[in-house]
Image (cartoon, rainbow, N blue to C red; front, side):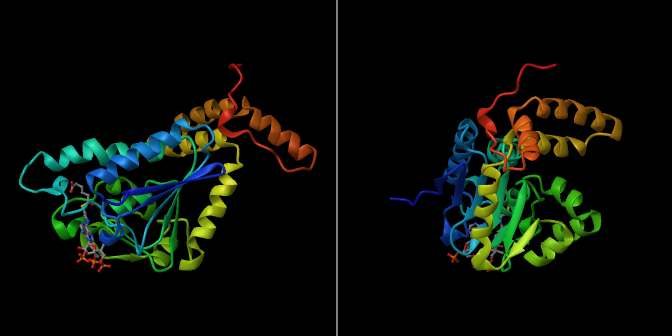
Amino acid sequence: MDEMPILIERRAGYRIVTLNRPQRLNACNEAMLRALRDALSEAETDDGCRALLLTGAGRGFCAGQDLADELAKAGETSALGGVLEAYYNPLVRKLRELPFPVVAAVNGVAAGAGANIALACDIVLAARSASFVQAFAKVGLIPDSGGTWFLPRLVGSARARGLALTAEPLPAEKAEAWGLIWKTFDDGALMTEAEKLCTEFAAAPTIGLALTKRALDESWGNDLETQLDLERELQRQASLTPDYAEGVRAFMEKRKPVFGGRTVRAKPGR
Ligand code: T3D
């Protein structure tokens, strides 16, 4: 029987999703893409899930599309557009929209769509031995899965073009120095640090974090006036959550706040 293409571990307040085709550096075949889609949807509908950790089994994070899979067949002009429409684009959208932080723990090479799936996560942590490769140029494709959107925004035009046009691997520490990712850790410490962060997120004011994700994402398309209006509206929503009341109360009482997360609902508008 085939191995499960992804593994899901349920922890207190968060889930770990592990891409699990280590013999192919966790390259995505159709079964994996479907399983990943279902895992994200399940996490979204579980109010007890307040963070998600995405990582890879073995020595790689994800080598992008499995080039040996039916999905990658060349020669049919509409085929790859259809694959993006059916799988990769919804995946990237979902990662951005999930109502809690998504942490990528990039344990090894992240190539092609695998690199850009990592960049679609809210926080990218990487092992010192990991690297990011916009491998598309080597096989005659363009960076997809949001690559052409994330790269220039994260590292600027010159570096985005260099990475995309040469497919040169970017080592994790340089990726951190360039602002492509959040932090790098020694290989042996990566998962401990990633889980520590998810544990913190699992006790955080989740609705406030979800609204923060939205404000940051929408800022790319907004001028300052529009963004100020958006901040006013989202802050109004945040201030109506019991977690805001608890945060202020806990501060005044000089104690640690106990946030309800996603199970708390905003009071009616005012
Ligand atoms: O449908 C569509 O195609 C549209 C969507 C496209 C999105 C994309 O992601 S296109 C880009 C696809 N990915 C790539 O082009 C990356 C291909 N892989 C590599 O360039 C290298 O493997 C790496 C730079 C990632 C790592 O190199 P290295 O030397 O550490 O490992 P390796 O020996 O190349 O790979 C190990 C094994 O994994 C090897 O299998 P083997 O020889 O031991 O049986 C290799 O063939 C396999 N593998 C790695 N990447 C893929 C793969 N098999 C299938 N597809 C892969 N993408």
